[in-house]
Image (cartoon, rainbow, N blue to C red; front, top):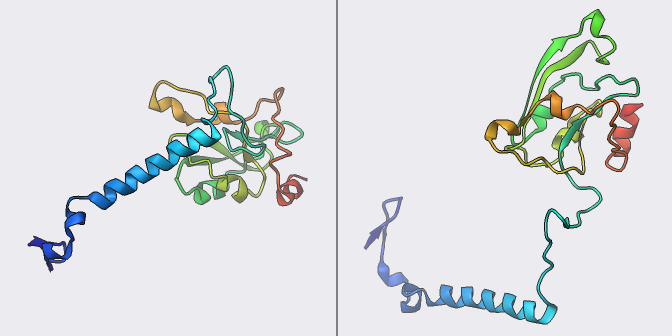
Length: 185
């Protein structure tokens, strides 16, 4: 006799002999293995890529490393509204808002900006919810791979890694929806 978590008594007589010695589970597993072996013989082995010399082809709209966009005048688009952080199911985005001064008018579009903007890339699931939630079209996922790091602290990307460089703009027009294109204007 066994006790379950609800304190009901379950009899061992409910299981058949084949189930007690796990024969159906063993045959099911062997069937899956045989199916994959036959498929490999008939269709050939799947492609193997010698990374990093040869990279596996990815779709045109692939979600990779994040970028915080700048406007046409080189100012940061992010207004620290926090909608991206709220929309993030993995809770990977944190930010601190600040008021811009008169001397910083050429750096930020609005009176409020993100003085600290961080994404924990180990928590991020690259779902794209942050770019959908952003009313200013400030954050996008690019087609670039996230860099390999050697310690956990290096995976917390701040504005130094996220904000696009003025002289190295990243083209995201293929990723933009009609709503995002209109928000930029």
